[in-house]
Length: 416
Image 1 (cartoon, rainbow, N blue to C red):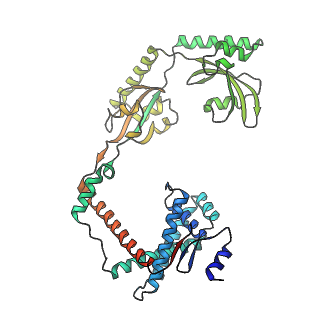
Image 2: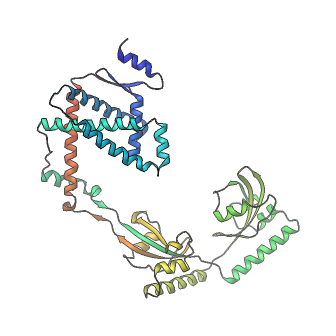
Image 3: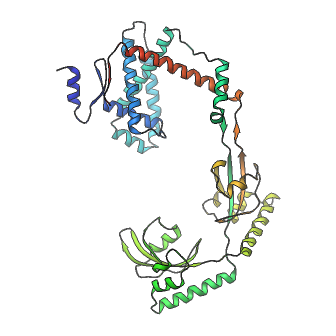
């Protein structure tokens, strides 16, 4: 029995030979370890598991080919001790971060990537880089030459993708709800009291929902929202219906749609079967104008310096997720803004406050703490980066030539 066949049998079905270089096997577990390491190094890599395995199998084959080629070349001498010191520094820095990422530590353990296994992988990478650099030098390939014309040509051909710097805005806002008039509020209160009186005298909730609810989606089925679990509805509604005893009608619950009465009919595990009656708040143009006038008055106070935007946001904003932070939303790409925020952002420069504007959520003031329009980097700004990139590509070509040369000297087989 050959050594290779014996290794394959020992590996068993859980670990199999997926590549051979000369007489040395490459096991599936080696490839999978490299996949795990690759995912850690580039967590946003979109490649599929299978395609990544093929790429990393090729990398392991290239390593073994270069190691074998170097073993036959007496002029190749690498400082393993220096490589080992560099690897230890990498490992110390890596493990120092793991306390903040327990899920990464668990992933390493699940994949069987012990510290010793990682050390071996990193040592192989370090040896590989050191050997190919010596091989390049021995062939007179010390530094790839990239001509000015190559750099200029690459810039002109790719500047629409590589040189574009997306625009962004670092912004804050103040949000004002548009509430109905006192007369409309009184109308809703009278309607709610009327329905609650009928319910207290034995009225059927589903019949009343069909007659009075202003929710067109549920009205025809007696206000039924069906079985819901936490998170299906708004948080302010969740807090009511999941604390409501079965068979009990809730007090009026406000939401952005209006006011609701809820009836929990049944419970099952973490779900409730619930009905509701919706009383919509009808907002008129006058209601909107009233809030726009208030927002404009506050804007004048900010522009005149009577108060800062952050102070105004903490005092007046009804977006309670941002008000305590002075209305700060964050840094947002201009291309990611949706209407009407995109068109409003186009009208303000850094340090400016927009005029009041209306969205589906109410009235807003928008403050551009910092804003940069989309721009295109010039050739002078990009030429060093492009030259380095093209030099790296030429080094990759040199490496491909080395590997192709080694493939002519040693047997290679892939089984993945």
